[in-house]
Every structure is written in C-alpha cells, then in structure tokens.
Length: 515
Image (cartoon, rainbow, N blue to C red; front, side, top):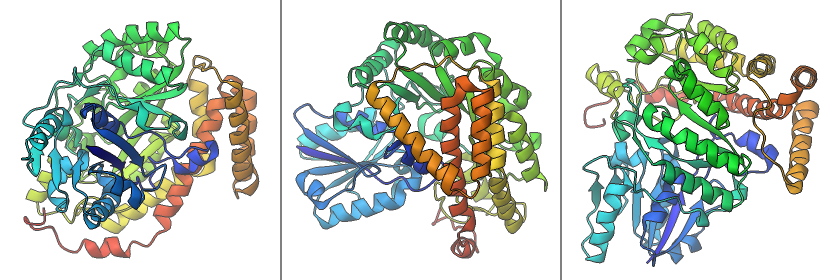
C-alpha cells in the first residue's frame, strides 16, 4: 500500500510568520506534526511519502504514485484542502481526511472517500483492519478520547528539518477550562491526557539525533493543564537537556494561572522555556465573565504577565474584541493593556464563532449566526451579528491593529519586554554553517527594515537601543524585529482589503439547515 500524506496550504495569517521566515530562508514555522504521527501508526510494510504544501508544491505525479491520499487540516486550510480533494477525485485516487477541521465540520467535505472524526489513535486502527478485510466504512468516529501513552513518536523520516524554523512535539491534549469561544475542549475534552516522560524524551532524542538544534514548540493548547504530570516531566527534561548541553529552547501555550506557581516557573526557566503564549483575551471583567474565562478574573493580569517575564520567559498573548459586553472604548483599553504588559507578540483577533463551541450554540439559539467561520480571526470578517455596531467594531479593530503593529509602538514594547525578561539563560551552540546563515539573515533584515522600509529611522533607533541597553538579548531583539515586520505586512493586507464580500455575506442569519 502506497500512502501519500498531504498537508494543505496555511494561508497568510499572523500565525504563518511568512514574512519573518523569509529572512532566515525557511519555508514554514513547523512541520505537520499530526500527519507525521499518523504516518508512524501505519503498518510498517506500507510505503509513505509526505508533501507539506507549505514548503513544496503538490504535483499530479505525487498523487498518481499513491494508492490512497491522507489529508489533515485546520479550518483556515479548508480552501486548499478542498482543492486537493478535488484533484484526487479527478485522478481517481481515494482520499481519507481527518484533523481538527473535519472533526467539527465533517459535512463540509462531501467528496472525501473516508472521513475521520476525532483522534486517530481510536479511528485509524479500525480503518486499517476494515481495509484489510475489504470492507472499509466511509465515516470513522472516535467513541472515546484515547490515552496517548501508546502514541508513537512522529515519523521524522518524511521531512527535511532544514526547511522549518522550529520543530514541534506534543505532551498533552485537552484543557480543564471552559472558555465559551474555544473548540479545543469540544475536540479534545476537559480532562488533559499526557504522554509519559519516557515518550517525550524519546521524541526529543530523535530530534537531537536528526541534528536539530534550536527552538522546539510544545504544541499543547494548555501545557500546564495537568500540573501534576508537568512537574514529573520537567525535572527529567532538565536532566536530559543538561546531558546534551541544552540543544533546545522551548516555547508553549499555557493558562494565565501559570503566574501563581513559582515552583513550576522555576522548573520551566531551568528547562530553557523562553516563550509562552497566554490567552489573556481582554481586560474587561464583564467580557471575561461572558466568555466563561474564570481563570483570568481571579488575578491581576498585568502583574501575572510581569511575574512570568521575571523568570526569563517572554510572553506572547491572544486578545479578542467583539464580546457582547465590550464597551465603546474597548480598542483603546486593549491598546493600553498591551502597551503596559510589554507583550511584543500580541495576537489580537475579532471574536469568531467556531463550529460546535458553546459560543456557536448560543449564537445559533439567538439567531445571530451569519455563516461558517473562515478559521482566521484576524481577517476583519465576522460570522455573527455583534452587539456593537458592525462598522464601529471592524473599523475600531483595524485601528487597533495598525496602532499596536506600527514600528514605533512595536519596537518600544519589544524594548520594554527585553528589559523585563532576564537575558543570557538561553544558549544554543551554533555550528560554523549556522553562523554564516545568521549573518546572511541579519543582512537581509537590515536591508529590508533599515534601507528599504519607509519606517527605517525607527528600526535604526531600535537597533541602537538594544545594542546599548540589552546587548545580551541582542539576538532575541533582532528576531522580534523580524516578527514585527511580519505583523505589519499582514496588517496592511487585512486592513486595506475590500470588505464588500464579507459585508454582503452577512445580511441574514444562518438557518438551522445551513448550521
């Protein structure tokens, strides 16, 4: 059996980091971890290839080679997914589709031959057995959320690690909280399931043996969802890293209550966690209540951010506007909070109703749903009727984006962040070839931001400040400048595009059949 695994194109978003990656000569931020894991679950005698369309084009010959094509995608990748499914149909190749998008919107992939709803540990073995018996079903739906203690390490043989800026691993699935807008708890549940320390170290060892040195993203939606297991894992991770001279720096996602756990923060600092993404969402208490974000209401959010930063961990954060309880001045209040928190990488999005979430169900009951979500909450589109005037909300959101991603604002937040985050703790050895690459990347960045850019004065001022005031954080400061450039370019794309299509698509609420 020949299996072609295909990862559809991830479109231009704040999360793609495409404009920043161009400076370092990388094609994508991370490899498709889900498909690499699925590959490892297939029978050993099956041939397999992977095409990540974010780093290389998919050709007809790729599809013609295969007996079957496997696809996985998030909502934001649905257009590319549909195109690949159609091409496979035209070439007469059976298609199996799974992943987060299909798990909540299986009805939107009518031309797939096989559909997998839920986690592959449950559905894939059943499919393989049915295929061997000549009686495969069209739809496989997980009847439970499986333990991931037997999940195999991802199949790294299918990728060229040099094409990615970071590698990724997964420690847990699920989150103990109940945020109304979140689909993670609907897909993976509220009881976090974890891998063992032995599994994690085996995956990291495989990356180390493959020659990876640099950032590793632990992709959990809430790394500290099961604190007991995290506390078991981190000391083992520290010992493993020490024995190999700390080859990796880690980043992950966590809930804000991380700030109350000094012992855990000390372990993460010792393990070389250099960045964490927090779901802050909003400084408006009434909106946090509306979103059922109780974990954020119990603490001073600004102090929580500052506490985490004091452990040498830079904070990224997600913010949302469009809640029913947002006041008219929400945009200025978000700007002020982001500025005061010294969070350079602030991802601000419009509230969006994702399928099967509690928000989706509430808005459906209220007759306020307009259409399916694009999966991108930063493209200035709305898929529901907001309480705030729609034009006021969208235009206020655009003004917010332009403000926080303007060079002057972004560079100042970066400087404030570098002054708060203890420097010098992350040290990853660079080989000679890497040093050449670093020089080449820096030259590209200086030419683009310091010569071609209309805001070049702000860049040179920033470069002078990090050189004089934050010399030990100089490398991180340059990386932030590259990411800030990406945010600004994407903001220009989203904020300047015509919204005629979006406005016209939202004239009437969805019917029950459309939902």
